[in-house]
Image 1 (cartoon, rainbow, N blue to C red):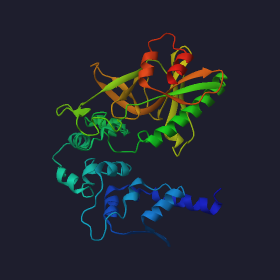
Image 2 (cartoon, rainbow, N blue to C red):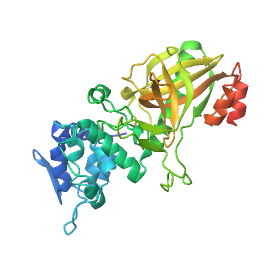
Image 3 (cartoon, one colour):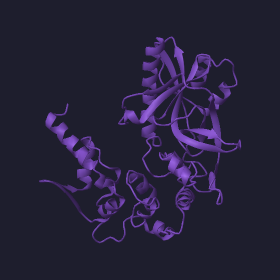
Image 4 (cartoon, rainbow, N blue to C red):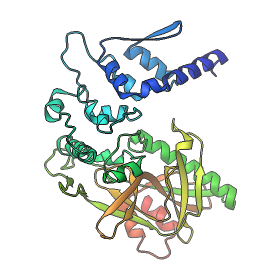
Length: 366
């Protein structure tokens, strides 16, 4: 256990790093360009280095993501060599007056190649800048999974005509990394077992996670031989392969089950909802708490490890992304059952049967 003094020190550091000063992009830009950094607060001071940052992380201090890039500029080096996508994610908490500066403000920090490809142009509309950067990262760096980075301010994106697949880089979504996905799956298991035991007296449940559609090492897209995504220059629409997993046509059986933290994930950011499928079969979906929707499609997109909630448009071939999510099939059982993965192809075959029985789920999962 941590001592009261140590706990208080961590709380002070958390409060220090949460100051609005560290959320100003131009301040962050100056800090990242500095060859050495020393932070003073009252009588205390700390030299920022890779070692000191690692120590802060180990002690549970909530250090801004961009801090890990501090001190990367060496004395005799030229420009820094930082990847644009990683910088956009790391500085997603930063604030700007002009939304274009969210991207333009980082171009002095990126690699030589990216700097030669991109340059600030304030004659471009906000929509053009955000679509253009997303398309650039997909085309040149095969960043096909960047659509997993949630756009929290969807209303702002909509007001500027920015499509739902384009990140606004306004927050970090913990639903795209393998470690994050595993933590959410563990949370789904715990939520379902507790919720069904409390509400229905169900003692045992079988949970079969539904896989996404990530690229493996042999994928054609990995070698850039075949592109699985293309951006329409006029409309800004993203053309890609999509498969519908389940259509959620009714309200959830249990909604807004807000749970505590797991695996370092903040509980108040996410919620687990359970939808009825057929018979004793239900699907649990974990996504961001503030989302509101009555019906949606649970889909998977090629190149992405997470699943997505999406709406259909008037065109049956077009979807509007709502958010990335993690999902699992949930069935009641007579004895304990470990969490296993249910492949999409198996789920598709199972959906042809009525009723969808627990035995079918267990057989196909094994």
